[in-house]
Image 1: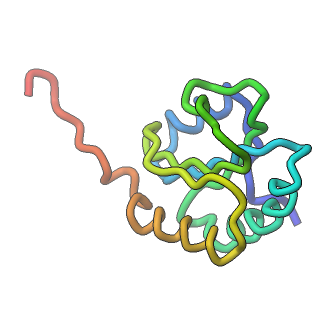
Image 2 (image 1 turned 135 degrees about the vertical axis):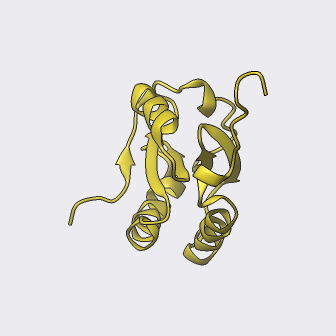
Length: 124
């Protein structure tokens, strides 16, 4: 089965945030982190179940970090973005119920990013 989690680097991250009308959830991880390794299959499972409501992605925390990923205090870190703006964060290992709850709550609050911001017309 193909992964439902998109692998990102800096340029792909910036492109995704600038073009997505959906909530984007990014897991920042390190390949040597045991907590990251433990949460990876949980995140994959949740991406398979909830992928129609948000975009699930992951990015190596120490490689090619764009500005929006700076300030990571621990891994794994899950950051939530709507239209390029960070709208939430979960830091550290979470069991499946806890991570599911955080993701579902964020989808409820910010799932429709197209409705989150209203453009002001020029001269308005």
